[in-house]
Amino acid sequence: MLSMKNVSKDFVIHNQGGIKITPIKDITFEVKRNEIFCLTGQSGTGKSTILKMIYGAYRVTKGNIYLKINGEKYNISDCQIYEILEIRKKYISYISQFLQILPRTTALQYVSAPLLEKGADKKEAEEKAKEMLSFFNIKKKLFNLSPLSFSGGEQQRVNIARGLIENKPLLLLDEPTASLDVKNKERVIKKIKQYKENGGTLIGIFHDEKLKKELSDRIFDVKNNRYL
Amino acid sequence: MPKILEINSLSKIYGKGCSYCNKIIYEKSEESICPECNSVLALKDISFSIKKGDRFGIVGESGSGKSTLLKILYLLETPTTGDVIIYDNSAPRHMSNISINQVNYFQNNIMSFIRQNPYQGLNFNFTASGNVAERVIAKGNQNFNSVREISNSFLSKTGILKNRFYDLPSQFSGGQQQRIQIAKALASNPQIILLDEPTTGLDLTIQAVILDLLKALYEEYGFTMVVVSHDLGIIKHLTDICIVMKNGSIVEFGLTDQILQDPQHPYTQSLISSML
Image (cartoon, rainbow over the protein chains, first blue to last red):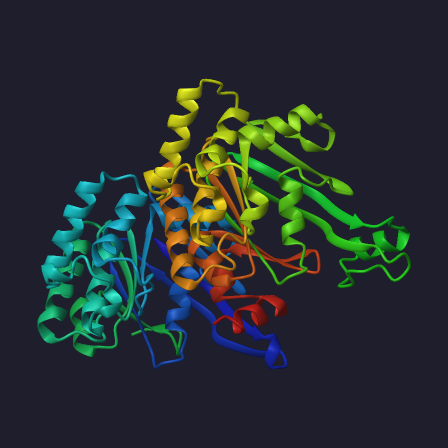
């Protein structure tokens, strides 16, 4: 479904004398359809950079990222901006480590937004969002409050609820469970397994070793550019 | 989505211009004043296109040429060279050779312009309702009751209370004046709305309210939005695609999240590093 071929990324920091940082170099791997594929490695090895390149938020310096999905083929490294917007809209959900939200947006608005952007009926979208929030143990009284006032764990669960509400074919997860307790981790695991049963493909970063082993079909060591 | 706006090799020189001006423009040199003839080189060989429904940002510091560009798009200024093409029902219309009547048609029917300063965007001798009505009438509606009904409905939509419809703009706060400008812009049901620093000068809470209002109206009406701002926060929240301008040239073009997270040009990097 997705293959990275000799992908490198350079960041050139111009106002620091043109320092070049290369978090990843010549990375090559393939992700099969309907698998849970885990990226592993210490902090700074470029795991998040890879997810952001797949999502098109970072430009690829060298190499290619091929995406084959629903009979269509793209090379994300060469895609024009409108193609990237289309790929995101149709195929990819991205859940970042941190909640990126305006302070005036409520949890319900934040989680239902992807459905509304696709043209769903407002009432139906809100019902679905309420279901997702309840599943992730977010109390009803918090639905109409800004998630920025929630605890770290609650914020992460709201973030995951938003990412999973649409069921897009490819899900990119950047450390979604770092601040969760055991009970809530189990909820996330259950939902991710459901997502896979429904045909979804996931590329994720999990620091929790137990979670990584329980969920992953394959694990890729980013630092050493090899499957484990 | 089809293209709605196309800008080809657009340059703007204030002054008589000379061959050295052309050299600066086409070599994309950083000078903004010609050392030979003292002309101001406001825009230098700019090209890009915008698709229907885009939320398009133009960012850069003061003097980068972004407001000049917006004035040319709204046909308030003519470019020195180059062309603006507006796709009216998918038919390309070249703005370089149109009559005054056609300029009025595009300004009243196809585009609206929300200015930073309400004194430029509103007629302070007319009431709030009268300002919006002016726009409805310019589009061709001459039925008094219908004009009043449409004008007041747009004022309501932007949060102006019914008992204030017939107050003068000078009796409103800065944020409310911007709401009236937005109502006025929407009243002609334009395909493109151009916004020049729409929240500059407003306090932070009012800025947030205006940004939310613009987002909600975009979702409801689906117009194409071109937002000029020096504030990357506003560009981040209102746009999906943006260009970064410096000294009259485009230095970077991309998805807004790409530009913010992975800026390539030294100038973009310094803009982002100075974000609050």
